[in-house]
Amino acid sequence: MTDRPTQQGRKYDLDRTTAFSDGVFAIAITLLVLNVEIGTDEPDLGEALGDLIPQIFSYAISFAVIGRYWVLHHRLFGDLSYVDGPLTSMNLVYLAFVGFLPFPTEVLGEYGDEPHAVALYAANTAIVAVLGVVMRVYSIHHGLWAGGEDEREHRREVALAYLAIPAVFLLSIPIAFLIAPWAGQLFWVTLLFVGPALNHFSHTDDG
Image (cartoon, rainbow, N blue to C red; front, side, top):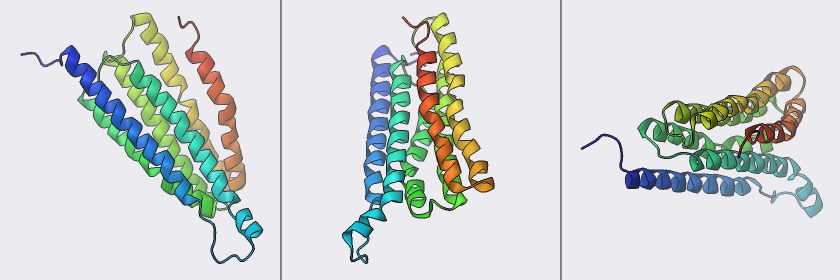
């Protein structure tokens, strides 16, 4: 009896891990809307809706962030031939921070004018991104990645390039403290340019 999983067992473990991960992402992205609550002590509806702008902003940011991380996670596990114990454990830690994201989202919506709120949100999202890169590099170095050696080398470069995402969030923390919280949040707009650039790089020489 061999220690390596059978082909059927590999697919079963990979499918179960992917399905569980998708469920966590779905729950996390659904919980975001619960942070958007209209105030009952505001007599004027127009003003009450206006007060929701910070919460709606944080909802939109987090929806985009979780959606982006789901796409990257989907790509990663779609390229694996199977999963092992360490990768499964890393994925659980990764999902723990994904599931936690609705909380810093709520804090950002309520206290977005304070640098600590920006720091909490940025730190959480940066940790998720770093863990995603760690899982990518681990899967490549431990033979979990399907494809030839040339493709694996390219994917290794792509994984390291994705460190640009947590770099943006981490750099926004000192910006929020030294300049202003809104400046730190504005710096996140950089991701609109980083994302397409990484997508272009990840597909270079593919196929």
